[in-house]
Amino acid sequence: MQLSINQKKDKGYSLLELLIATFIGLLVIAAIYGFYWVAQNTFTQIRHVTSVKEQTKVGLAQLEWFFQRWGFGVPCSNYNNPTSCIQLFVDNNTTSKHPYPPPSSLYLRISQDNPCDEVWFYGSLGGQGFVTRVVGVNKVAVMSCRLNIQNTQNNRENCYHVWRRRTHFVNKNANSNGSLCYDTNIFNITTTEYPIIFKLSGLSSNNLDCSRENNPDNAELDIRIEAYEGSWEDYNGTQQIFVNATNLEGGDLIIRTPHLVHFFCRQNEHDQNNLWLYVETKDVALNCKTNENPMPLVRVNSFKVTPQNNGVLVRIEVIGTETRFGINNSKIIMVERFFGR
Image 1 (cartoon, rainbow, N blue to C red):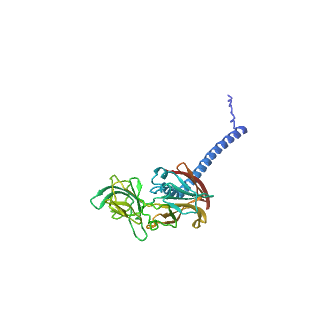
Image 2 (cartoon, helix red, strand yellow; image 1 turned 180 degrees about the horizontal axis):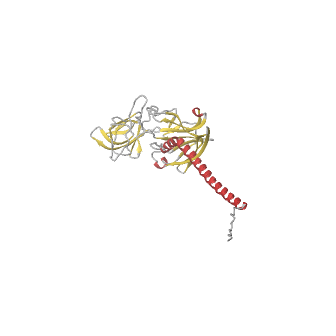
Image 3 (tube, rainbow, N blue to C red; image 1 turned 90 degrees about the vertical axis):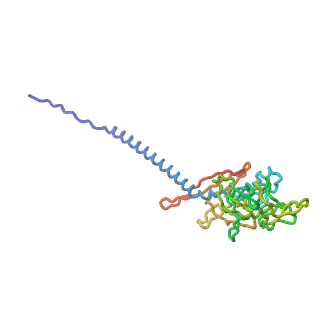
């Protein structure tokens, strides 16, 4: 018997098929690598921007804090015309002394330059309080938000303006020029009716935080307040007299006298002379004079301030650095903020 065996040959891939498979594989690998590259690049950029924001966060927060205080608690020379006192007033005369009280609470002096503008404005950087009621004979209850009457050698905070019925106390004595209250080397007292600066006494506790208070008051204060200089008209019976002290009343608003805030750019010797934004403050009250020397806020490429409507648009290019493989890489981001009332 004869057996017949059919042998079947195994057929392999052709060269064309191998080339097509290789091409498709390369396309898949390229797509995966492209996705990885985009993801890695995006992550690097986000990390870089985040790093810049983290580096500059404190400085930008301080910048915003100062601008948010702009105009707050600032008396106005046109106090009989409340409308003009809340309108933006731009002062382009950068060679003269700063007017106090200014023609508007929203006073702004700008010196435009490249790459940085120079800016001055007034704002109350200290505490405030609101008199809620009279307590007994010698005290008043107040809602204190960081009121402070410390008078130590290096911490003199006891200088306040007082508002009563929407108007601050002003000097009416023509023989008083405010030179004992204000630093006339920096500030030009624009009127003999300058804002009175008062000294408080008997505050039950300094620097109280009112942000979480549910009660109408949290401290007590001596009812009697005294002016450092100047006086106003009062009556003793039918006789008109000048007085330099008064009793606080319910509804009186007490606000720390303002500071002149100054923003400018200069090279920072502690950062390889790179350009930084600085801020310094001058205390309006000569009796307290809590001035702050220039303090660097953030490294910048530019700082521009533009009056807009009843406020200002602040544009600032901040610079941060990231170290990769021992090399410092700089990144610039633009920040815009609008401040107004």
